Length: 289
Image 1 (cartoon, rainbow, N blue to C red):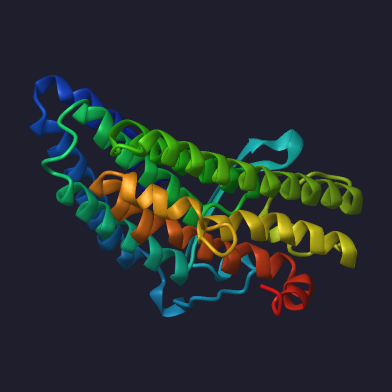
Image 2: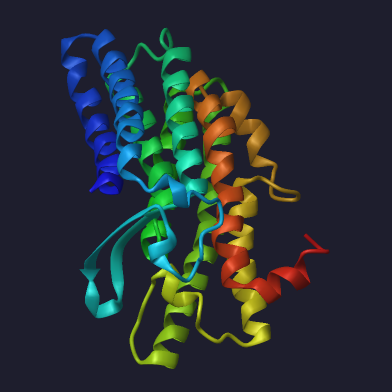
């Protein structure tokens, strides 16, 4: 339940921060900071239950038991969709970094956004919810869901509490990330169909999709679907033009989250999904990338 709780604490904490606005503008700030610090302490305390002697940044990708901790329940079994989470050394480090920077983002914007303060802090916590989910999700459809969850509140932070050019910057951020995300979704659905063709059942599990045979040409196109989505978020040339506008127009908390947290999800996606799922295609494409 540790992994599920890491998501629920931030998700429900966002709703609590929004609700607490009725007691004054100070309460959402205090609630949001308290939720993030509580989650950080909760994670660190529960590290004693994690077999850290097996700590590694690169566990055996096709062996779920080699990960530090995992959690899985059936979600939509007819289509092979599960609520599947797992943590290794890489995701553990990134989650700790996310929580530390999340607390810094809240503190750095303490005197900002006096209007709708509860909703402001809720969007910070919901962005962190999506990021933590991205670092834990091992079902690719669940990963895509968290990928989208972290983008919507970030868009709202820029669009509502940004500076003079916030409308243009937020829309540019939204269009870049949504279009690239759709490419990844198509690649995920094709992978699930290939698994169904090979085994007779659908599956979106990372561990199952690692082992399906994919023709060389198809693998290249699917790899590009993931690659573009992650490079846009990284961001890399020529998909980087949304970042200067978003940074300059976002409120302080938004800039901290963008630079310190969201950009890391792009690199994480390349390491966790693109290369392991398509090793040969990634190797061939590496000189170009």
